Length: 197
Length: 268
Image 1 (spheres, helix red, strand yellow):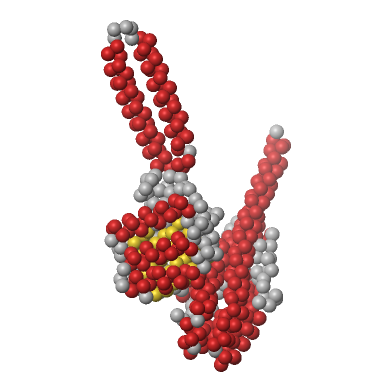
Image 2 (cartoon, one colour; image 1 turned 90 degrees about the horizontal axis):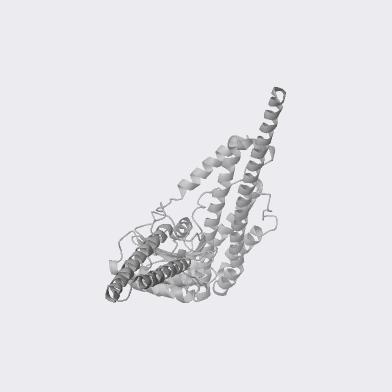
């Protein structure tokens, strides 16, 4: 009996730690998966904004022909932000990709806010019904982007904390669970582009 | 290297959170109803009227509309606060996401309609804005806050017409079945009691028998009712909203709906 005791204990320990490892691994997969799903929501709310822009540009054009430069800047920034290279594929939320994505979207935010400021000079445009509707849609979309981004940061932030924690970090290192980049608030970016009433 | 990045990320995270002033949303209330007037803007009658209207609406459509009145958002964008609030309180049903939150900040003179994911396609941002500007603000400008909220919610009803159907979510559906069995049992006992009395009582004791019959009936029906009450109490304890049928807030409470930032806001 004594002869078998040590091997039995070892086998039991191995089985227990394997079971634990599998459990942790699956938990991490779930957390990472949730964060990735949320990332898709973030992208789709940015996409929603990009989809609104052609309409907005067309409406503004009708009234404000003098704003060619501003309009062109918006169109260009939109093209930049909807380039296929910018969208982040499912698994590849790396810091570089994220920075690129954020930069492109910020470019669009800036161009948009300049456009909306210049619109102030055209009272007829501001009274136009379809412009008003677009404006409120745009406003709602900015809010959606904010909300989805924050949800992503919460999920990815939790995941980041967990993969660093002892003893989960052992499994995380073994199975290549990498830290996920978060949205960083850059100067003034927490203020959504001003949509003037 | 890895750790440094982590620390940096953490700091950036902290900065971004501290930069955006955040209003502290109260804990999810125990009694989950349709109106929370933290500012005491509405009179008691107005509040009850609006509350009952919204609860009835939720009973028939499962769409939960909640009105929250606060003093000020403390510098946070009201659109954003509305979405956060709805998400935190989980207004609306879980798989329908059909919650709507109307948040009014009295001192800021701002109001927002925040829509759950499942409401966005009907109560669009533009529609919310229109309701705020056409139906709500004109009343608010005359300091008639009840009028504005009343009209605004009616306008939302119109927009949402026929979108969701619902029954009051509670254990109510099981309830009649239990009661039916119980009443049936009482009925059986009652029958047995009568037939026994009939058999025991010989000729001549007729009047006494009727009396005891009546007493039996009273006792039985009383005990029956007592048990009924007890079981109804148990039911009330199980449901989170206290089991009140007409004034206990939403049946089943806030249902777990999620908000994605849709809606619009306006000021007056």
